[in-house]
Image 1: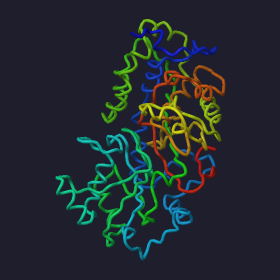
Image 2 (image 1 turned 180 degrees about the vertical axis):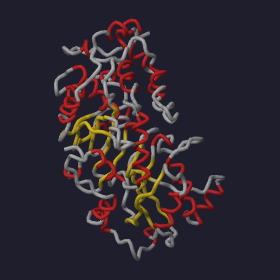
Image 3 (image 1 turned 90 degrees about the horizontal axis):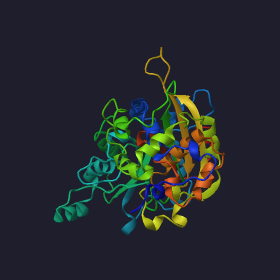
Image 4 (image 1 turned 180 degrees about the horizontal axis):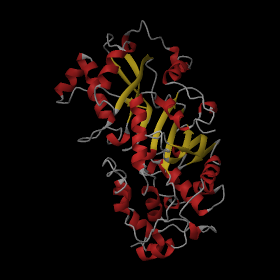
Amino acid sequence: METNACVRYNHTDPHSSSRWTARESYQYMYARPWHKVLAFYSQLVRSGDGASSLSTLFFSERHNTYHVTEEFQVFEDTKLATASISDRKGRWARVTFKIVVSYHGPSFDGWQKQPGLNTVQGLIEEGLGKFVDDKKAQQLRDRSLPVEGCAVVAGRTDKGVTALQQVCSFYTWRKEVKCGEIEDVINKLAPGKLRTLHITEVPRVFHPNFSAKWRRYFYVFPLNEEEDEIDFSVKDLTSAAGGVDEEKETTQFAEEDFGHLNMLDGDKDDNRYNALGKPRTFSINKVNKLLRQLEGKALSYKMFARDTKASRSIGPPTECFMFHARATESRLPPADEACKGQRVMCVELVANRFLRKMVRVLVATAIREAAAGTDDDALLKLVDATCRRATAPPAPPVGLCLVDVGYSGFHRDTCLII
């Protein structure tokens, strides 16, 4: 049996005594007004403006966020567009559609279709069943399966994670199917929670995942107007997390992460002793400095991943190239013009790929390291760690948003945080 001393990761740097434990980090992450972030993302999805809607957070900063349709014109100039869309014969006769959707994460049980759960993929594929060709439909009926389409996605999102411009594709042998017909069907599936932004016919060689050059994620972390000290020794984690949700939409988020905290943190009395004297606030400027150290580097982020298979824990599959990593302070648009909007820290990350829960772990770890006052290269040092307990538990999923997916070269002038 492992002892508590073996289970807890032993940081040996000078800031070890100031660093939060996993339990303390969770409580700091969850004891916040997350319902305001929920409402903000919900409004963005309903607006139907895609990635450009995030510009409302940065009135005073330079931003050149493009409209959702501009990215699709770029696709036509890539090598993927060399295949002719018209006059196809034989196996190339099928029609492939590129579908961009926006959805409110907390309203679904993630993207990936799972039995008995309300997932985005399951809902979309159910709607796409109306456009499946007769041969495939009959094959599905013969196997006693529901007649559904097949939606291939650029990247799966976890439960609670919102997407402003998620990209998926669907093909059918029915040439008479029009983009507008697919758009109308999807928009009726979950009004206000799932919305089609753009649909276009693309060459068969297009793949939402493998054709992508980069992905952009955005994390909104609410800040208390006056950062009250959190008593790590008294508050219970599960009750703190459950009390955050005023609309009962997030009581279930990240439940899979709670079960490991006792094992990670060891004895509660030890935690109560260590919590004394630890910092309760952090510098956003420090978080920005920590993240910027990752820019322009191809690194293995296996220490920042969670729930990945053993075969993907070592070697090239865990390597990601970070194009852009920045953090800044902003305010959410106020519901009432007479009031100030909620103070938030915004984190923008752009990379060629992301591992499972990588963004949430990066955000939580950056906040933890900033609060502990570590050196600017702290995240780079953690890349070389030998145990995932060296990094913080994932930040709440409701703060995360998949902004967009790029199919041409990355240009920094499209970023929101400069």
